[in-house]
Image 1 (cartoon, one colour):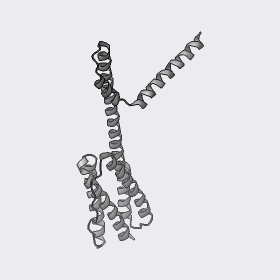
Image 2 (cartoon, one colour; image 1 turned 90 degrees about the vertical axis):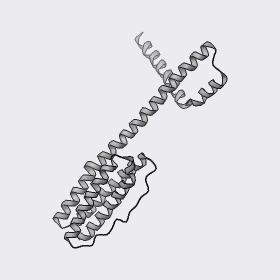
Image 3 (cartoon, helix red, strand yellow; image 1 turned 60 degrees about the vertical axis):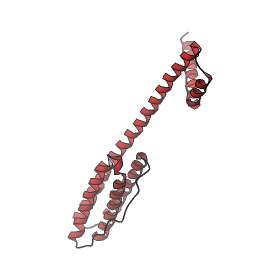
Length: 194
């Protein structure tokens, strides 16, 4: 059973390697994971060579994902599928050395690869939030300029239309509703104190 299991594992590692290679232009964590997958492949090839089994070439080639977020989420799905594959292969394996290798490769995916990918995804999402906050700050700064121009009568119709076109009315509506909610809650709390 070892050769069949090793070939299935090798196929999975080839797939992972090729995906990380296609994603390597995004930098970390893909460049590190690419190196690790190469080590996994070499370990599996070592076992196949020790059993005098033929080693197939890597059949996979992927296009680069459209963006970093897609690359990370796809990689997370692939790593989860690898963990499940190693669960299946381990049940059917009797060679203790091959079984140990499967456990180590599975643990590497679970403890290291998924963690690195989750950290990258979290960092990406945090940077998106920061970007949105910066855009909000820029809008508030522009609002201040518009209010000052309105006060001194120098605001043109074109400037006003351009400014109003940038506003996110859902956000403004939510802010207004939130403000009314705070006012009402404050009134109710003050009533209870009297």
